[in-house]
Length: 361
Image (tube, rainbow, N blue to C red; front, side):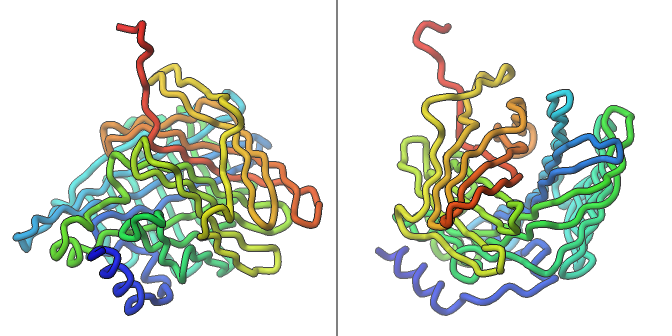
């Protein structure tokens, strides 16, 4: 009851529109934050690829201490549907000695950089030491940033209002530049990137009430998340949040129609995201099973989602301690007025684990 009152009071007095380009950067007063980019690319050789570049910040602060420790993991992957190979790299650096950090218009961690060039322009680079994969992209948007929830205040659980984030997306960023895989360079002919940015866990609130700590980023939480950009100009985000492995998923979403009108789905049953039957893909590396085909229903459309290829698992145990599936998907749908529509996007599945069979050692 106390937490519910605190959250509602905080929500009433602190809701405010985002301020850009400032809010594109990390926020030092919050405990957990991520800013990530996923996209579909077509090269000058007419080959299709996908990519993920995710920047994280985790701030650790003792209840009675004025000092804090900042950690900056990065996840980087390129998906090659032509060979059905998913290349990945992840790092973790502390904000010491200039190796990682953020300032007015730059976020960096080792060989990974996000430069904020304005409200609608970004430059991202990834040059890991092993040089197996790299990228150098210029991203530019049209100004159509998409806020989630109530003016960017995105509640993840109707049962626990203290689990929330400040959350916006920037779909349809035009992507130019090049990337490399195992020494071969590719130039982007056309590319569309989706940017997602979330932050949560105000340090002052946590100091007053430790129960409001980093619930969103806890290892026990899980979610199924998807972003879709459709051929008709609409954009959709749907996610199912699970506080733990046994909790019933709670589903939320945001839809922007081709004319720019935004619909927020926050009521129970308003939107659904369900795996197709019991069909799952089993990772040959971790043995974790993931549902990769999904049915999505909103008041505006219904969708059938299919992975471009299955093997797009990311093992990030050496940086954030997680294993998840994140990869390219396509979708076919029918709008509420019975029009056929197609979309491309990215699907993320977090919180799945390998469960041994009873006969296994």
